[in-house]
Length: 329
Image 1: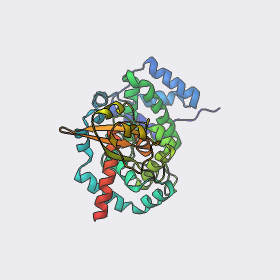
Image 2: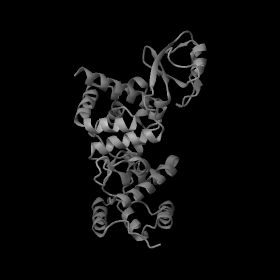
Image 3: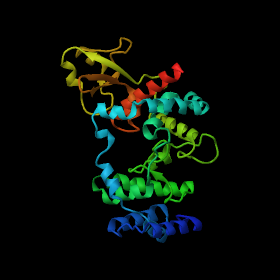
Image 4: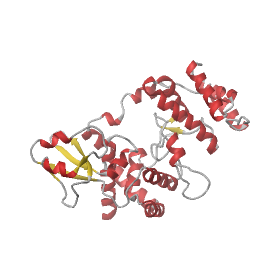
């Protein structure tokens, strides 16, 4: 098969200019050479083009530092305070108003509630205000080649990013994202972009950076692909008698216990829920009390976006606050 060029001539020249301007070069290590060889063999990239491209990559210590202190490492009370703010709630109401048509159409077609889609975009980027300050190419290369504990994952994402750049006719040195390489209003990793991003307005672009409608459709598609249940509940706050419930606080986020068993442990749950329904008991501690919640299937689906139960609960509570504020207005 004929080798395909990584970039058009114009974009390739721009990339070379950026490399010289940045004056930053990734070490020519065995790992880099192996990665380039893989891209050439499996995906028919041009070896010389890739080598020139990587001359512009900057391995950034700031990215490695950020990986060491993710927000999900904070206690729930502190984590919640990041996202359950008046400005983020008001911003969600405004984003909903500004994109009412797209949200209504996507909710109708997908079954994913508009407030959930809005909340995800709100948690991820505050409705597009903070989509990331790092070049995606730098972030993925830094973590792929200089972060051994997760290098396999990030090299796979780097592979997907280069494929994405070719498919979408992007200069790989241009897209900006988070320190982990997440992109756009949706903060999709490259593999998620390739799998789930959608072109809502049929302009032949899946633009999750600048087109809120595409971002809205893409978030909903991600949830549908992870088996969102139309009309299904997400979570319920519950209370418990005694200490027996603690034996049900197991690791993970997937619903793993029939509701009937929790009832026997002294947990008071909504009567409308059947004993056989699988749920996950979750604890969210505050400084002076503890909240117990039942996570249902759709709560688990939210954790497919980010595996942290803190993230899923923050998104869920933000969605409720946005919907209530919008209804009041």
